[in-house]
Amino acid sequence: MTAAATLERPIDTTRLRGFVTAFADLLAATRDEQAILDSGSALLARLIATDDWLPQEFAQPNPDRYQQYLLHCDSRERFSVVSFVWGAGQSTPIHDHSVWGLVGVLRGVEKVERFDRLPSGELVAQGEELLRAGEVDAVSPRIGDIHRVTNGLADRPSVSIHVYGANIGAVERATYALDGTPKTFISGYANRVIPNLWDRSRNA
Amino acid sequence: MTAAATLERPIDTTRLRGFVTAFADLLAATRDEQAILDSGSALLARLIATDDWLPQEFAQPNPDRYQQYLLHCDSRERFSVVSFVWGAGQSTPIHDHSVWGLVGVLRGVEKVERFDRLPSGELVAQGEELLRAGEVDAVSPRIGDIHRVTNGLADRPSVSIHVYGANIGAVERATYALDGTPKTFISGYANRVIPNLWDRSRNA
Ligand SMILES: [Fe+3]
Ligand SMILES: [Fe+3]
Ligand SMILES: [Mg+2]
Image (tube, rainbow over the protein chains, first blue to last red):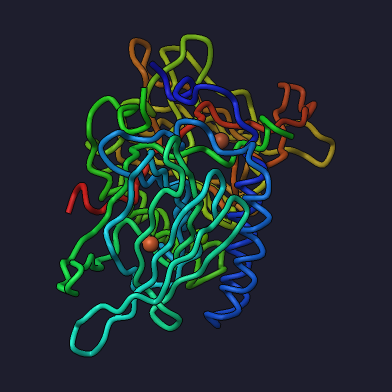
């Protein structure tokens, strides 16, 4: 098979390409984290307001575990855009990020449980929240960085679009046992190819 | 099929990822075109010195015409990296680029014919050159921008890696008839998916 044939149906890449370039412009304009989270949340909310742009190849659940598909990584790894897909009943471990992140639900519902970690290492639950399609949440070491995300739907996948202030699949960070014991991990990505967002001749 | 399975064999993305980040660092450090071409040529020469990193999906000839596969595009479309694949006997039309570009031969031989264009619109041949695997050539409106590239091998494909100062597949530029008559074109890309260079967990 050829590269031209690997996406199962043609998708208009205009919306995701516009999001990537607008986010890059934002990062070129400011280094203030709160400004990035505020303006970035607005950009992400606009992206996920319509569910017609994610190629289905990057929305496929895996029966064994939630999937993390890279959609775009910046040339200097200053940010990355990722689709997360939870099958019915799937959840992440409790984990941190070590960089700022935005989570926007594209499809379905996600349950977010937040934790603080005491100087002793103990985890303290900070409550939970349901995020519905169209809603955006933020994390960072500054505002709170430890959470567990679970598919809020019992019978079908949920999909969210995440943006991070690094190449998140390559960041050394930690998962936590309920007693607070950390374990280093690097998530990687489920996909060996990412969408070509850049062919303006196709959707002009 | 799943995105994880679309590349036919695992390829170490370290070399191409390192090239992309080094090139982005170069563009962040200078806007002087000659400095970009000089330092960029050295980076490209190092990339093409070894032919073990291009996934075969992005080196496939097409019997009908030469192929242009996007490998990476910068978030702000400041540069792009492309593999060009010429089958036996294939060539480009005479064309310009409108931005700076570097051409490095990865595999095979390419014949480059250069042209000047007079104020009258007439094309004047400036000679031709054979570029062999490992060699790098530069173009730009400043130093000369019109050429035709032909596979220098009669019996098998040649492959070169190009870098341009824009998202080249989206740039409006021109092909030329032998009498100098221009025709606007936007090349686009042959591929709907590009390699995921960013999973450092795979090749750590
Ligand atoms: Fe998370
Ligand atoms: Fe050219
Ligand atoms: Mg960039």
